[in-house]
Amino acid sequence: MSKQLSAQSQLHELIVPVITQMGYICWGIEYVTDQGIRTLRIYIDSPNGIEICDCEKVSRQLSALLDVENPIIDNYTLEVSSPGLDRPFFSIEQIQNHIGEFIQIKLKEPIDEKRRFSGEIIAVDITENCLNIKIDNELIKIGYQNIKTANLVPQY
View 1 (cartoon, rainbow, N blue to C red):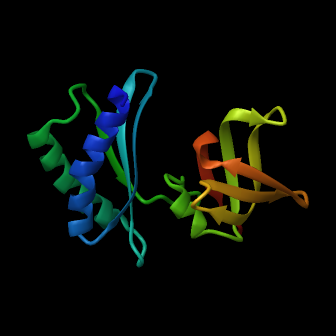
View 2: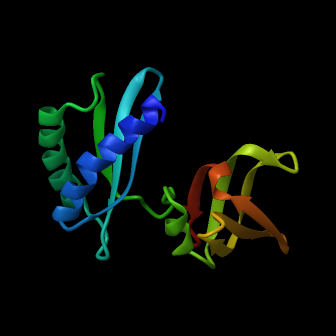
């Protein structure tokens, strides 16, 4: 197990129960570095949607927890937000709940020399860990392990 993966699972074990106990859904956790600035970004959701006051409440609770537990040695910024209309997907199960909607995908390894795809989610197979998207009336099967990023494409 890689060091980053174990740190990610440690963050999950620490953060998810607190968010759940507060009555929210932990949609996803990202720990990213951009131009030397480290950010711990936590997406929360609920059936009633998320407002700024929800993010503030969760941020205060998690900030206190992270100060005590100190799972991240480096300096970082904590961000708590809603996944938004163009929500990132963190699991194939999340994608399964959006069949019939549109998705934008960046791949780790190209398919037919392409790494970016945008199309309608037609089917998700949890057992095979893959999804089918339709692009210009063509079905493309994508293994979830090959997805670098996936976001919902809002339809207005």
